[in-house]
Amino acid sequence: MAKKNENRVRVTLKCTECDSRNYRVEKNTHNTTSPLVLNKYCSRCQKHTEHKESKDKK
Image: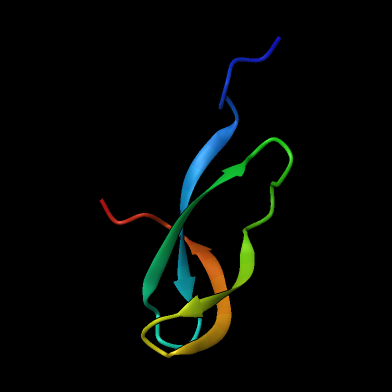
């Protein structure tokens, strides 16, 4: 049996219009190998825009 959250990775979503990093979500790397793309609300643009997975800033 698999351990809890073994395949889950924390990723940052970046707005495609203003390049603001607004959201941090978890994705299952075993099921989803492609980069994550979601429509989310951007508080900086003040509208719903496409947010793509980006590399984390450490």
